[in-house]
Length: 379
Image (cartoon, rainbow, N blue to C red; front, side, top):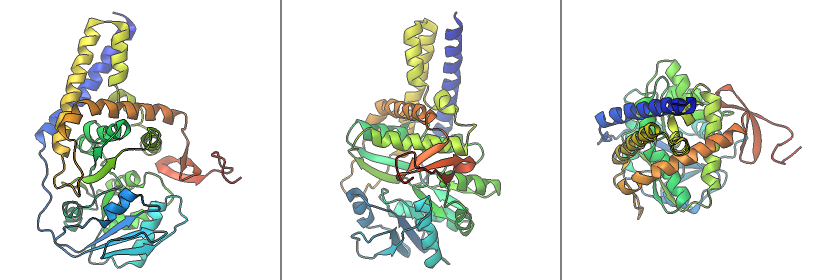
């Protein structure tokens, strides 16, 4: 047996064991029903700069929440809004504009006696999501988060995005099951306690503020809870493969800045299938081929389990969820997308270009403006 075959076999065993543990934990878990009857007063903040037609539709979707709810769109200009939705003009100068929007809203709006939720405009908010985020905070959690669940993909790029976030180890349900230390948090949908709002004030110059917020709260022994209801993100068709690739390349850069020890696990544990299939084909070892076949089987079972756990109920509008059938194939598309994004991030370590500006990344995701602009901007 050659050294390369032996190394490949070791890699297969490691990756299969990782997936097997995740599958076992997820098989023991059940879909958590969101608390019903939660009626705590809620302030729902929707930070957005330039909403797309799809996002405007999301902002206009009625929310069937039983308690008092005020929805405020925090934006530089006033989009067309549904009745009862308030506009708060905001044009922050902070590197992280989303955090800047939130900090301004928290400064000028009345938050006392209400649970504050911050949800991106690409999420179609439902009453179940509001309850799922507000209830843990009302019960004492420092922060709540919801698993982003893309639905309605219509082309290869959107299917890869949905596959990555729903059917692979990068699903936030899988990340939550495998978390050691600070919980994996997605900033698309958050419930903020007063202590989390206070901690957010230090993160206006950070990218990946959700990861840093979770890390700081965990260091203080505070609870971060996962909502039983998902954050549904209607997709439709994506303009090009460059859109998801740029997004997840930046995600890899954020991971390298916030959790450098976890960065090498992306190819080793999160995206090993395609490289190992290629190695098995090139090396031709029957033992390696059999081991890789076992890995593919376990990964497929994991995708199917995640599909069951992530199938949302009561989708807004005419959105259709692809659900179980796409899970059989799209987990591999998602792995491939993340692997390419990881490779792209290797050539962009240390800096990130965000909203047309280039920043040097420091530990913890802190961004420092680079002059002159590497992207051809001022300077």
